[in-house]
Length: 149
Image (cartoon, rainbow, N blue to C red):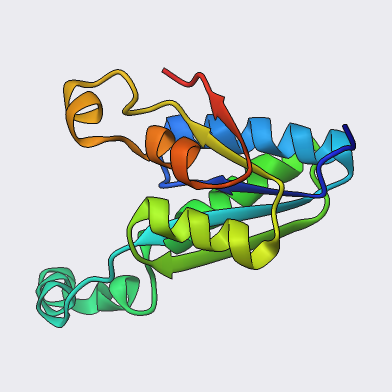
């Protein structure tokens, strides 16, 4: 089997997702592969942003043009660089995590998808499905589920 050429990993800014990013970065480093870090998000409504701006007053600039997904991607990139990954791209997209990850795999022609195991062993994960379980069934490429919890 040849080395991976493109590795996609998802992050939501949680500690467990950063553990998956670090593992994906190590695989990408060892394979000299591109690492694509993806974050799915749901944009804030105008009402939510306006409420935050009202609450912040003079510091309202803190919620304009910023999203938690962007911060999660910056932190994930820093962690990937610390592990030794060199070919890194980041991508945030509005949508459900499984759909956003599958789309990234298809568009980037990835051959490995890395996710954390968060949600696999929860009751809701067993009843409703979890991101790791859903991408493992639906991604169409190798999936590495990193034990993070």
